[in-house]
Structure formats: structure tokens, C-alpha cells
Length: 189
Image 1 (cartoon, rainbow, N blue to C red):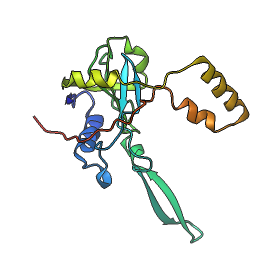
Image 2: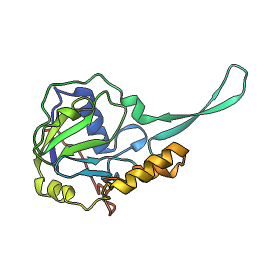
Image 3: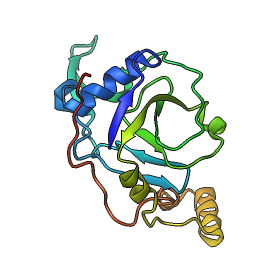
Image 4: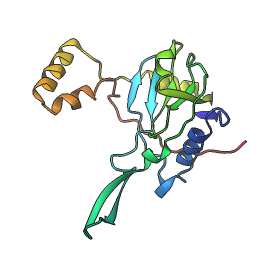
């Protein structure tokens, strides 16, 4: 899928996106090997989920008592920004990134719908130039479907504090087969 980025409309977000495509973000983080992790048919395909722990780095420091402590630093948190634009989310092939940064994950719209409900969470950072058939194949991936009985069990599990309830809830709209970004790069035009 070839994308055109809206650098003037979302400068910081597109800058991070380009670095992630090229593998030049901190410590070589890249979208290569990241997963398609949610498909909301005819709405959005969510991509860019990195392997667990890939964006987390541990750092040792000395506290005021002289003891060595360890803290975890999430590289995605360093992408926080104030990018905002009024580009409507209303057609297939738009590249969406999290408003305010703080995440490497991104979305591609896969249908004609009123995306105003997404405008509070996402901004438009680009659009598909070529590769709509590939996006259509991603949109058609079989996924775990939400069911009423599963929702009941998840709700009951949450009430009693069962951690499996969160994992079961996280399974909804997840592709049944693993799909990864095999390679990616960015080129200046």
C-alpha cells in the first residue's frame, strides 16, 4: 500500500510515521514486522501494533537515597504532540493516527461512513495512493465476532475481577490469522 502523507496538516505525526516506516525511530523501531490487530469491517483496519515490549526500554537511575532503581520508558509516549486538523474522516483509504500522539498504531479507513465519532481520537495524516485492493483484502479478513453471550461472560468476569475477562474482550474484531507488515519504507517526492 502506497501512502501520501499530509505533512503540513499533521507535521509531527507524519514525521514519526516516516521514521517508523524507515526504521530510523529510536533504537531502530519500525513498522516492519508490526501487526494488523483489529478489523472493523467497512470502517477501519488498525495496524502498527509492535511486538510486546519492543517500544519499552528499561533505564537505571540513582534515587535520592543512593539506591539504583529501574524504570520503564515507553518510546511511544515520546511522540506526544499537538497535531490537529479538520480533515473529515469520511471515505476509504485515509491514514489515521492517534490525536495527540502517544502511540505508534495507525488506522486505514476501509469504507464510506461518517467517521465523526473517530475525530475525537484520530486525525487524518495521509491517504492511500495505490493499494486499495490490498486494503480491501485486509478489510475482508475473518475476525473474532462479538456475541451476546460472550459479552455477558465478559461483564460477569469483570464484576468478579477475573483478568481473563479483559483478555476475552480484547479478542473482539481481532483477525483469525496473523497478518504482519512485511516491509515498509518512506520516500520523499
